[in-house]
Amino acid sequence: MRTFGRVVLLVLLAAVGGVVGVVGSFVHDASFEVAGVGAPVGLLLALGLAAAAHLLAGWLLRSRLAVLAPGTGWLVPVLVLSVPRPEGDLVVAAGLSGYVFLLGGSVLIGLGVAMPYADRRRPPVPYDEGSGR
Image 1 (cartoon, rainbow, N blue to C red):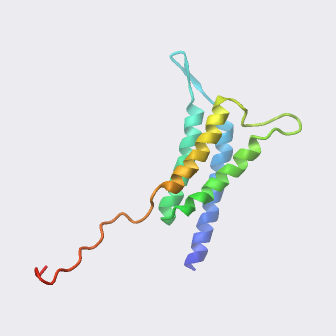
Image 2: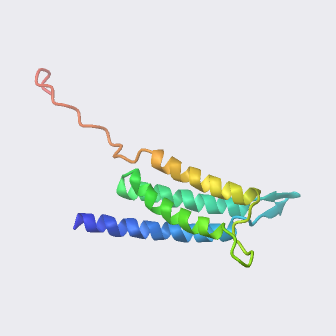
Image 3: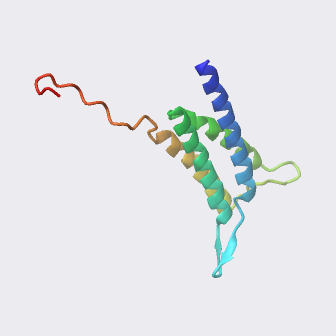
């Protein structure tokens, strides 16, 4: 039953990654003028959500490979939405924000896999018979 629960959780995390990828694809180009300079609020939001989904997967399952579930869920819709349709429409355009979104999200998947998620509690101190402790 434990394996079934992990599989269900991985499928849910992949779905979360897919939702984050679709939402990020549509909002990554949003920016607001602050003191005459465009602040990439949408790009920061999209990459922040992707990082949160990857870290959540690693922390929930305490596994580096668990990050690949939301990572794959993120990557598939983002790549599909970055390819132009026959009519010429596409969501992730070939501009600076589009490239940063694609590259940044891919790097976040790699960083999520590289992070350690093991239990960080201190190991128990062995009993020393000679000292009486």
